[in-house]
Amino acid sequence: MIGIGMLQGQDLVLPFGTITTSSLYTTLFIIAVPLGIFASPLSTLFWLIGASGVTILGHATLMEKPIESAFAEEQV
Image (cartoon, rainbow, N blue to C red; front, side, top):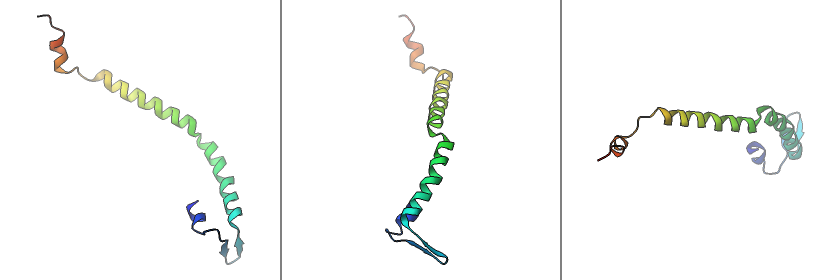
């Protein structure tokens, strides 16, 4: 998109012909949509959330309690 935007609305002139901006955007759309579906971004997002949750909660369960909590449980 950045490369097409750098043309500033003009056609891309190549030695063997010219390509219009609209056909460049259409080609980009035809390539990007199947790649986006293949990448399955929603399942990847859910996987990252789940893996982060397991890592954070696993770390929290293995941490030692702070020293203040040991004295807070004693009866005076």
